[in-house]
Image 1 (cartoon, rainbow, N blue to C red):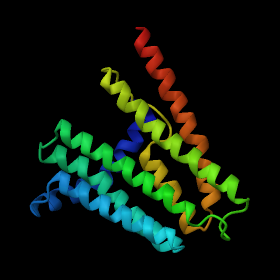
Image 2 (cartoon, helix red, strand yellow):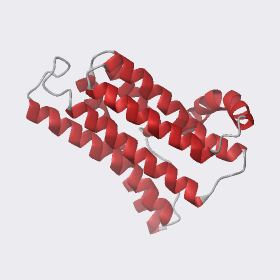
Image 3 (cartoon, rainbow, N blue to C red):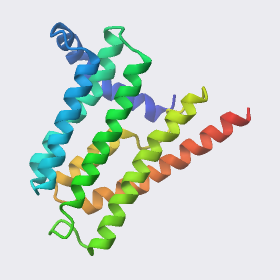
Length: 198
């Protein structure tokens, strides 16, 4: 594990470790937490689509907290399962797609510096880069190759997009997501290629 990955893991535990024991007492299962996160993310997408960027960003960050907590809760309660992992990954893709879809509804507004065609292209590239980042890891792990490497994971994407919404700089945030997602895709592709050759 690289120093950056270790730092990411420790930062996540600073958030989850105090909350997980409290949540477990509420009898909430990891799958319920994932479902709550899905609903909150969809609400965030609707709010963003109606042009309320700051409010949408805060709701989006709240949903991101649930995304952190469901896996941590599963490990804490020793309820990790293959179906739970599949359900979590599926929900992640649905919620990411919903957020990127919401950006389409604010194209042509004051938050965008370029014409609508370029705006839509940027949204599409950000979505493809995000999906590929997760797909390569999932496909690699299906081949029994660990693939947690990479600079820009889902957590970083959530933070950058939320900051872009809060600061009314959606274009800049999406541009960052495009560049760093494809860098991460390259990192993971090379990593899997090297591992597969051994």
